[in-house]
Structure formats: structure tokens, C-alpha cells
Image 1: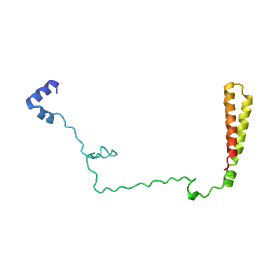
Image 2: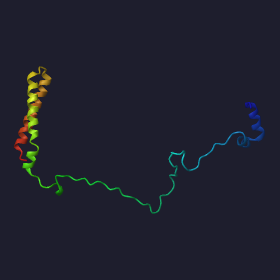
Image 3: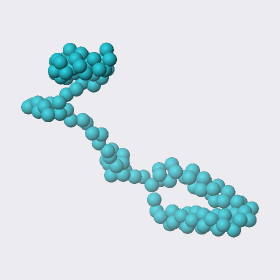
Image 4: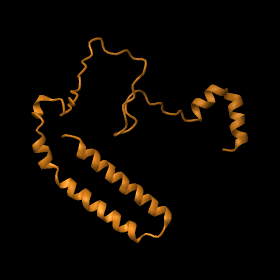
Amino acid sequence: MSFEDLLHLQNTMGRKAFYRSVVKPQKTTGEGQSGKAGPLEMSSKSPAPFLRKVIASKKTMRRDPRFDDLSGEFKPEVFVNTYKFLDDIKKKEKEIVQKKLRKVRDPELKEKLQKLIHKMVSLGQFWGQCQV
């Protein structure tokens, strides 16, 4: 049908009747799923159930082992024996930085390495004075 014929038919039948007969009405989907895997449509205006069951999630209890009785008492001898390998690592790192300092000619890098060595020495003195 041409557009002119459609206009003539619309004028003779009336607008509502024309749209009902000629134009296919669009299907309106009610509440439900939009597809097989689509989410379920629900009104946001619907009230919550009266006696809703709320399941409280179990929160994991965090604990600080420094202040917890389960961790036992602090024994300085065990601590020193356990972590004395760190002293060896620190000494090796200090030697490596000193070797780099001797070989470096760049003044900026040399200054950074000197600051690093100073920091290592001062921290070593600090931990040497502290009683564990």
C-alpha cells in the first residue's frame, strides 16, 4: 500500500481503529524474566516481608598476636636465634653498597649511596643498643 492509501484509510476509519487493524500492537512483557537467563523483574515499590529472615554473616575475628594469650610468651633468646640470619644479610648488603660506592664516578649516585650507608650504620647502631 502506498502512503497516500494509508492516509486515506486512516481518515475514513479513524485513528484508533486504523492503528488497531493496520499497525501491529507491540507485545508488552509483564513481570517475569526477559529471557531464559535474564534477571527477574520485581517492583521496587513492593514492601518487604513482615518477618524477614536475616542471616548474619560470620565475621572473621582478627587478632593481634602480640597481645593474644594463644601466641604464648615472648622469649628474646628464641627471637634472636630465629632472626639472626638477617644480620648476615644486612652485612652483605652493606658491603655491596660500599663496593658500588668505590666504583661510582657520578656525584649524584655517590651521594645517594653515602646516605644509604649512613642510614644502614645508624639503624645498625640503633638495633644494637635496643634490648630485644
